[in-house]
Length: 451
Image (cartoon, rainbow, N blue to C red; front, side, top):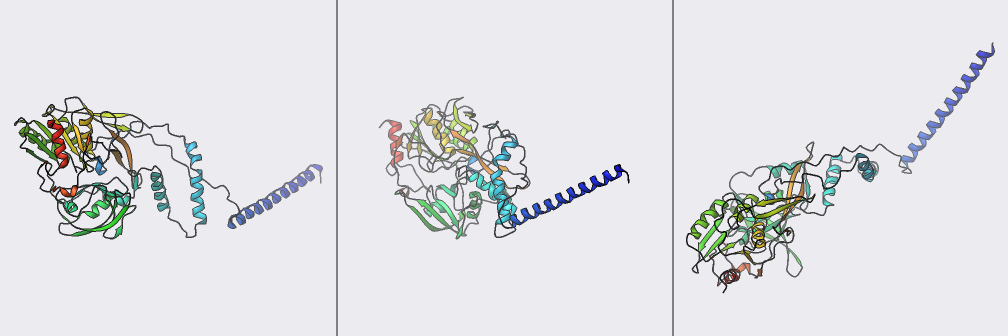
């Protein structure tokens, strides 16, 4: 055999030996890692799901009518901060994915439900914002919340806040079963017919409270007392057909016109206009606008109401977004009562649209507020459905500010003249303005007439 073939044979044997050694080493290493994983000794790097490229901040949708009911509202036109890069997000979410892998590998009850984990992660993220008005709804909850109400309104008769942690009473409707049952502003409904509603979207709780007239619902109420204690109790309420009158008015014996707004509904602007035309034709000495226990309603109605008492082109409110931008709302049309002396009555049931009007009249020096601190509902929520039938998120996108840039949310409005009132002493169902029985009305007349 020549030297050349002999050399090739030797080299081939050496190469084969090296390959065999590497194979044995690789097998041993893989077996060791497998054994260590089984014993929980090491956590080898695993593939991390890639994060999607951040979606650009959406543009503002058209204005919605009823922010207090959770309908979509305008949102910022630009992101408040620069969006992080995918690489930054990948690094930021490493602990999340590590926890995800640990749950899948170590949790005692397998297999885990990935859908529940995903929804729980979204819910926890929104709860971390510390805003009770921001939250998550499953697809089923979102579908129920979006379903239109059919038939006439039958229920307990109360203005409610569906953007808090629990369904919260803003004010009972005068003469309603809720008022007869003694419900008060700030009462939280924590159970319906014995079923705990903790974690249930307040809009869904509201639908459970609704029902045919003549049927009974048992509500568990959580009430904060003046001494700082919290009281929980059950109240049984028989539902009824609720008829809401938007505007009531009369000319008092002293020549002062009295106007009471029950709600800010679709017909309120035309009803208020008719009332003002009647009262102004009688040349009143002044007007009293009663917004007590008015839980609000349409934003456009608030603008229309304020426009009747303020000159043209005056700011009624601002909406301030997360990026610091603001959108102003101005008076519209020709006012019927922009110069007649005016006083506004408010209390803890004055909320939302009522606070917009009250704040505008107070800031412009158009009217003094008499009564008690208002409710403090001044944030705007937008409902956004998630992709792939993933439910929806409700996000606070703006705050309402008065013309002087005062924040309404969680602060309310402080009246110029604070006058307490025993609500139980007033029969709101058949209310007639009587200064002898109503100390807040009496004070309003004193301010208005200088007596």
